[in-house]
Length: 353
Image 1 (cartoon, one colour):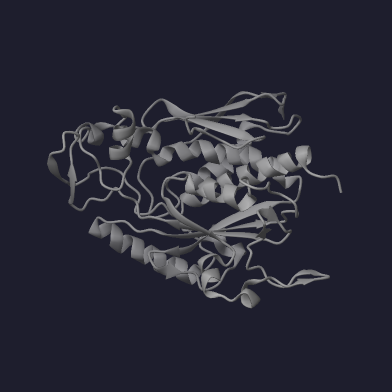
Image 2 (cartoon, rainbow, N blue to C red):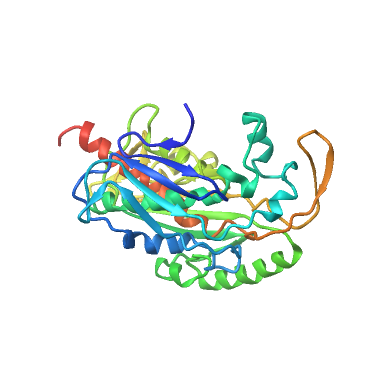
């Protein structure tokens, strides 16, 4: 099956390309009578939109959401919700010049090998532009899980090797990099400017917390909550790794160190990251996501064209220095979508307690 959809009960299907008429999403499985209007999307779309951070591309998209179906008189109807986001600031000129060349680090080569024909304008379907549709779907998912007291909070833990030394969630929105440590944020800003002058790019680590998640979400055996969360974030283009709870540190621990003691008041630690046996245990769910450097750089690189001839490539265009922080709301959205799906599955198929 083509991999354009995600979820079981709460299911999304995204569509559109970077330089086409726009992108969008069809959301199926949303319950009825949930208040929803186009203005509900403004904050989330602005968070993903370029212009917040010095690391962002100069491409300016308004990302105005249009609700085409599934809402009547301000309430969801239970039928599929269709959302459109039109492209308004498209310049395909730089891509016309390299339409037969595979850009290193991009999906150009693999899409060509799979399909034999590709939209070379801005990466087409493989572009990060597609993630605008995911963020829109995350807004709807958030309305579902908010009723259960669940909140998803993402922030930049590390950028280009500079790591937040303190986590103050009240400071996240005050940083252009969505970093909970303003001193680290200032260092990140200086680093981004240096890297931009070099014509290069950098990666980093995003941490996401799911607070207020009740125990019992997740399905055995192949639809474990942590498995679906990992798939959700790994489906985002720039992500190359994910860990939950202690993550890779658990490999260095003894069982007596890694196990979370259970007390009458709850768990005494949270190395599990809020998930045991693929099912939430009521503690905060903690994920850390490794984000690779943006592959579009102005430094000269070696590559080939579609006929296999060697090419020296030096890109010119409007590129981010880093996917961070614009990827943060995308990761938040995918986690909201996953939690909403499992929350609705639990309501339908879970045990009665």
